[in-house]
Length: 423
Image 1 (cartoon, rainbow, N blue to C red):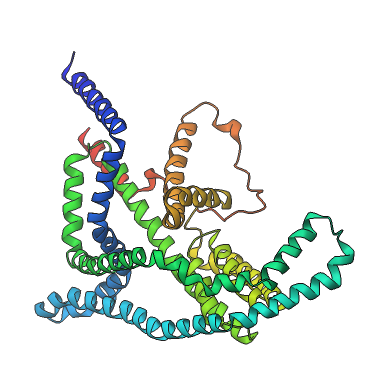
Image 2: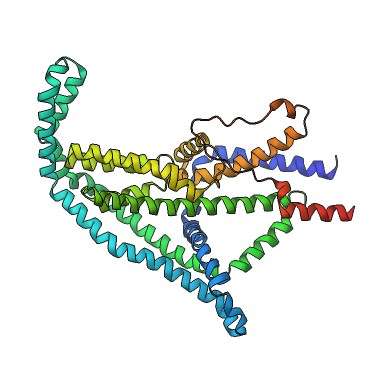
């Protein structure tokens, strides 16, 4: 047996033994992974913060302060530190400004909603009674299931169960206060440490990138190196465009929602606009996740106002989906609406809200890589002409970007040009 085959056989045995150990000690392995995740969470948070702030940092370093490099060595040294400090001050200054303005108003809106809930409940109760008395008694048989449901709803409101539930909510919430306090403290710690980590990551960005490349070149076989570097480049491109696009889109939708609700004099415009803006970050299902609690709030206040608010939200989401979203996101995702929905469902089922957010760029990368390999295999086969052109007749579809092929990469061309010269 040759040494190469022996190494492959040995690796296969080690992998099988490792898999067997994991399956027999799954709980222990899972607990270890959970502990490791807790330890590295500040670094993950720091990387995410650094990734988001990297664009404004690069703008100040490469454009706004680029003239400092021509004014002496000392100013050239200060260019990147000044850019880094400026980026952090602006980004977190905006966040702090929004918090100072929004938080007090959100608290006031929530307190007002809680204070007026009894009056809203009485109004809703009377609306249900009037509607059921005027329209449903003659239209729906008394022995029908729908009539029974209506009666149960009226009984729920008139009997005081709903009021009692709200008034006694503290009883249900109290057991969870300790867990909430622990989680809140942990999150504050992770965010604080993440900020420190992100600052160091950006301060040492060039050196860290060089070291990462050095390790990659050292341990990745040369035949796989161009593809690995291309995948890294593609991932950065996909995630960057997608994350910034979703954040900007959600900010615009939140502001438009607030302006529209203020114009039409809907109640609790700020509170509901914040809910709509935050949930809009999640693709496909985000608008529904934000609309449902918002409509319920409006329904408690005034059922007729809730209907008009529903119409307003539907129109706003249509504007977002057909005008604002495509202008901001463009065709950077490169996958159809069906695959976006599929990726969000799978990501949400596996990793919750975070999975729903990152599922689309992850799936886009897999889609592009798989599509590249499929196209290569078909072009090398005998039946390429029989497939014809891909149809584009979906009722719901995104304008897809031309796929990113490895052969178009500068790294790929440079690598193979060097190989041809060696031959």
